[in-house]
Length: 519
Image 1 (tube, rainbow, N blue to C red):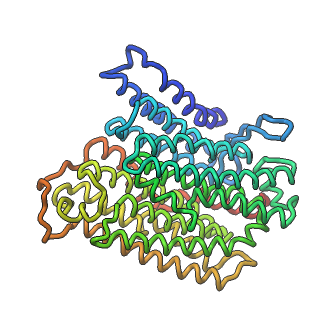
Image 2: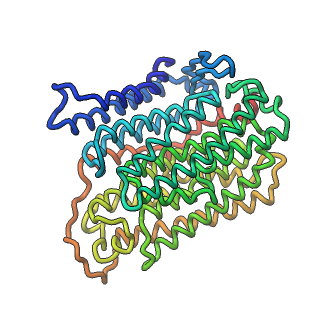
Image 3: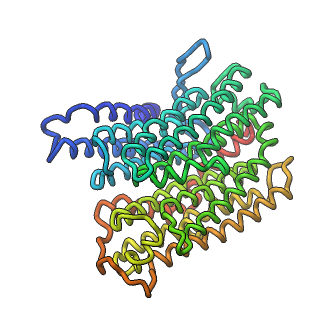
């Protein structure tokens, strides 16, 4: 187990370095480009297999205990250690990350986005995977920061070099927002480490903030929270996200929504809730307010984009939907209750699966039509997708109803538990305020259903009066698309019908985390 976790974190970096080397003569296949793309599929596939083996070897009877741990002294002067480990909170995120990277590598093997060298693309993809996997496995504050920052450069280049229109501006906006947030976050992490004498997250969580004054906790929550909120993204720090999603290549959008946004919310749960509980309790009502506003704001923005004649981009619409969905995650965290935090963690996984699938589907539509403009898709060239590419239309309709939180699918449980948590927040928090947030969240679910059903009606059912300039038939789902999308569909159904598969892992770990390691 210890070796497996270390291998999972090291393999992407070794694979990235190998991707830049010339392919051995016997492995070149039809071309060097095909060889390096096959290399990306192989490396991510091996990492996914190792993550599955780690999951099978995980002691599911004690998910609150850190397992597969490594603890080695690194920088003695600062008491920084290479401390690795997973529990019931981090394991699902680690496994989902490995899955999404493998599916993106498989998709790219057949549908590589236009851009420079495939070698650089595969190497950047693997460096990005190393940073995201490490974020969910490290147990030292400074290591967490290094892993958190490691993803910025590869994602910047994936957007700037392989993206679509306005990619340079979107990439710069992405990196400036996240870098500025990270600088503030580093100050908060140093404040905690220097005042407590350790950067070890397990020790700090067990101490439950007793070594930190209330003022220190307030400053730490404010500084770290800003950095995490930018990455989440929380309203009103979200403005980089729609541009980045719209400009990014398909796999970039999938990974940005499915993995990178989860790094921010994971930081709230892993660092701020157990280490600075006093500061979090002070700021929780404000976090809940921003979350509730983000839920409604994201839904209203999507409704505006979905209206006929507004020239809304479907990728941009799904990006705004992420602001709303991640609002439910932040609302669950703000309740500081086991119910709310479990809901937040469940919604994290559900959003990664469903929104990842949505971006895959929109990328496929854009490849076929040459545009993601909703008016174009629903009008002259896109009327009645059900009749032209029925399987593609069925997948899109499934992803839409899963995203709106249909009971029986994964999107339902996280949002419901977050609202339940807001109904009865932690002791010391204003119940009237959180009841208001719950009502706004409920309104957000109705608005979400509204804009997603409009999208399905306009794109899949089409306008019967529209004069189509497109051929009656379109290429339906290809074999590589089916292979990349089916696991996401299956897991969405599985998590929706059997929520205990996730809650059984997260609940004991959340109970221990909120109790300061004493339960």
